[in-house]
Length: 85
Length: 342
Image 1 (cartoon, rainbow over the protein chains, first blue to last red):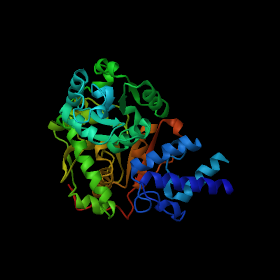
Image 2: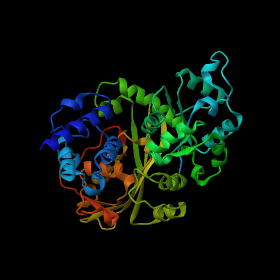
Image 3: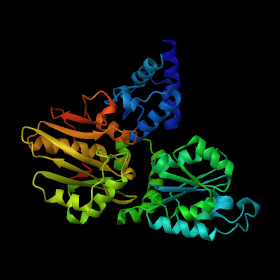
């Protein structure tokens, strides 16, 4: 659980850096990543997945072909958390 | 294929050090200036990453007589400047080359961004002849690529200042998307898109003009083109799809190829095209739309667009190399914004 909280905090920092705005730092975990949530477009989400792969070694795009992990900040943190144990 | 060359200035694009004589800056290096002009004519973009004040970039544009698609002047790491430029022009590392006279800077970029092609200035004159710098076909869209990216910079600057939603911004820019059947005059650009698109390409195979011509003549397949413009400029033909409609009515439309230029990223084009396909399929009596999509690390943006438009796959492993993404045409179906003309 602690690990997942660490992932969540790190993910918020990456998102804030990516969109150049501190909003993700205290957005609820259920905030969607795309469109009206954080507002990532498909390229922004791709850059996010690349950073996650570099940082955590988790290749979300090839492990989750339906990309359900991208539903919200929380689902993505949980997906990463489960894989890095 | 290299689509953008990022240049250092001091002792690279300029024959000297800019800040040593700001009143009388050094001239452009003639051999490299010739390379710049040649590559720009092939539709390759140029950008500047320099440890200098921003005035150095305006000076370099004046001295070379060329426009630069993106500029990063400052004292950050060169790899950070290169990454920022990649994001500005919407390209991945393997479509970018970096030219710098300083071996340490080259090593730093090569270490941080291993997919970037890193070259010394003397290598660049020769590299211009390499296949990676020689696009096989050149359409009007490709020749005007530098202009499109200059428009893109202006649009992005305005987007940063704009407070509203993305949809509101697209409206604010007077975005126009036109979706219409392909005509023979579109064949060279269709072929070019099939060669040059990777991030938004479902098939991962290239089609010749003759193959597209055969599709235009076929009774059961439809080739659909997407054109894009806004008040910053006309981007021309930016995307297309090939649909096998033989199974409809009461069957499934199969999208055999879906492709879009990365210059159209973030401008509502792929979502508009996917919505249009679903609505047209429903109107033709089909009950679902399928997109056979290759699974590779480069087309992640397309797969994100597909899944966020409601397409799903039963395939669980990327090892298969491709997966059918399917959307059932049960309501609610997406609506087409009024700036999409069909």
